[in-house]
Amino acid sequence: MYCRLAPLALLLIAPAALAHAILIDSTPAPLAHIPAGPLNLVFRYNSRIDAARSKLTLKHPDQTTTRLTLQPAPTQDVLKTTLTLTPGAYVAAWQVLATDGHITRGTVPFTVDPN
Image (cartoon, rainbow, N blue to C red; front, top):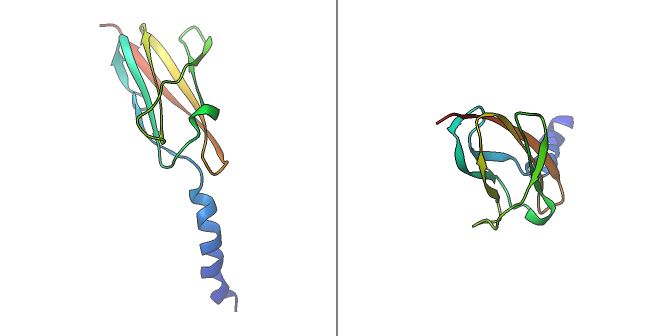
């Protein structure tokens, strides 16, 4: 009997696991080396997110942290902003609220190289 219920249980659990917004692409990519200057910081997720309740922060080489102002994105699965960076090691931290109410978080470390 348990063997017959296992497939049903998987069907009930799978939608919950897929509900979280997962980072699928970022600019810059994790551990990337990019040139100093203007940067379009873009994070794309596997599902729609509530940008008004999501956030991006940037940890600078001196360990200070700045909350970044988000810009309007072309689609509802993207967070983006533009900033100018000097050389050093940075960590972009993201927190998004998927439209189904689940919050996910993560970080993308990258290095800005001198020109």
